[in-house]
Image 1 (cartoon, rainbow, N blue to C red):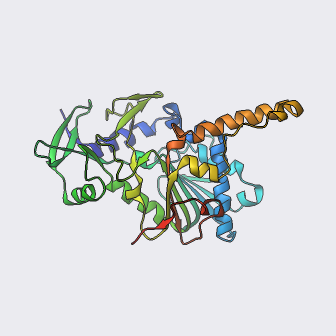
Image 2: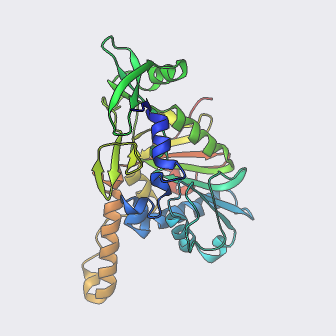
Image 3: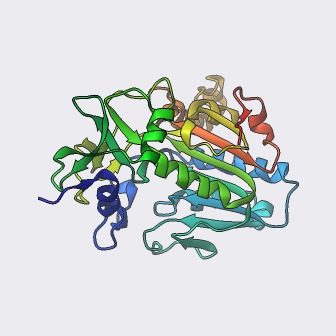
Length: 334
């Protein structure tokens, strides 16, 4: 039986060219439902945020929308379609994804595995960091953290003690707990993403946790065909773990960590029901508004999609007006 640490096992299972889970033609939508798939209102909110970034930057001649972990391009296309024509004409759309370009993706959308460089605009990473491969550690009988090794069938055993960098990360960000997900690779991936912006707003959206509320036994799990399953690194299922977003935040930038519910409310997504009087004057409009309220309620449900965390960082730009009033903004020390 072949044993390896979880990080290379996840990399192989999800991203290998000959059968990795995220290389499969059905894409993420074939296995789980994200905010992007739940409602067009999510893309509408992102489009409103992009317009706010444009205004805060003084309406530059060229603006970028960078969709990191683009799946099959659903969010990129929906944001493009939600923008007013004048703004859409100034936006360069970049979908960053390892999988091949989907058939039928509209022309004018740049597609590829690499981040663009020195762009101005909005970088948006929806449920990307939770799939950045990482190692796991558990405490041995003496309380010392050791890497968890995994076999292709999902069996586990303890391996070597942590390298100094991982030990330092655990000591700073996840000092307690029996099973720890070592987030250094995710911190580095997010730093690269933020570094792609010459100026603009970087947003990461994911299931997450913060120091003081780390899960004591970790969160690694699998998803297949819409159902949660055991995390087996054989390419048959998604492998995902919640993100320590407070650790990932790049220093030196105005930073907000908030819930999706709070962020979407600020961007005009409300689950409030339309006034009943509308049913008498415009029955079709009332039904449309009622359906939209239901979608908005799903996106902002604190027990569901609304529990996602948003990490928002402003890079050499003012905070967009829609977000300035949200509590918790701070600039992290370099």
